[in-house]
Image (cartoon, rainbow, N blue to C red; front, side, top):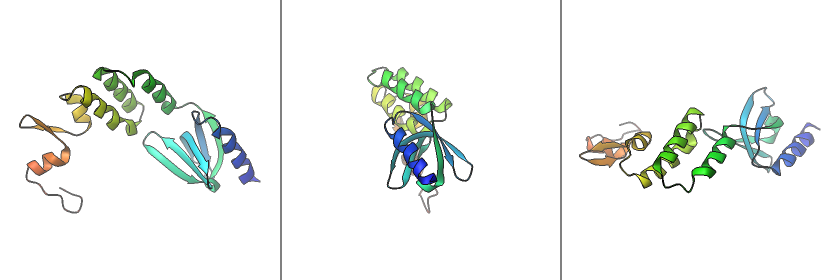
Length: 153
C-alpha cells in the first residue's frame, strides 16, 4: 500500500519537474531538493551540491515546495544571455551564499570567457597567476616542481 501511495505521489509530481520538494525518508530524515525523475524504482533528487539517487522503498513521502534551486533557475534565466561578467559574479556570490556550489564552476568559467583576467573568478576556480600567466591548481603545483603521488602533492 505504501509503495502504491509513493508511486502515485511521485507520478503526480512528475508532471511538474520544476517544483522543489521535501523528500521524507523511511529512516525519518528529510532531503530538500527537486525530484527530477522517478523511474525504475529510483527517485532522483537534485540538491545544492549535486544529485542523490534513492531507491523508492527508502522514500516515505514527497511534499512539494520551493527551494533555492528554483530561485537559482529564475536568476539564471535573467542573466544567461548577458555579456557582463559582473552579472555572473553576482549570481555566483548568490549561489555560494545559498549553498549551491554545483553551479559555481560554470558561472566562473562564464566570467573568464568574458573577462579572462578576472581574479575573483580565477580564485573561485583555484587558479594562480605565475609569471604573468594564469594556471590551474594542478599546473601551478607542477610548476613548483611538485609531483602527485597517491592523490597527494
